[in-house]
Image (tube, rainbow, N blue to C red; front, side):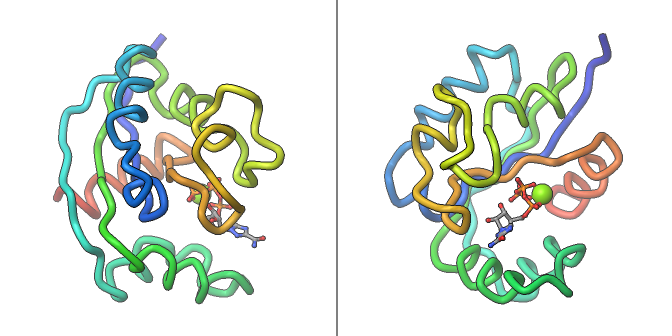
Length: 134
Ligand code: RTP
Ligand code: MG
């Protein structure tokens, strides 16, 4: 087991639904510690830069538009196997495919408004934490 850090974003839909606390409780119950956090309105440039890996994908424009549609809560989570553990808590990208009891199954509406982001690898986690927290 390895102590890892991962980047998590509570997206505008979940912030608007007032479920930041419920999502934080899931992190805490899974042994993930919040070691940095900020509540921000992303600019278009920040959202485009963050999701740059997807810039050629057909959904890129809608994804950026959604991510700047309201404030987001950004946090770095630390714990044993934090990257995978957070992805398990989140559930599948499309909430229709997300396992019962996952964040996306319980709080997300659609593949676009899907409540949370989580780093998908340890390497990307380091890049994403640096992107938002320096
Ligand atoms: P995220 O990066 O936000 O944690 O989500 P993810 O790893 O589960 O999914 P990813 O493939 O990285 O896609 C990033 C976000 O783009 C939107 N998306 N839309 N319409 C589509 O086919 C589609 N595919 C992806 C989702 O909102 C996804 O969270
Ligand atoms: Mg992703």
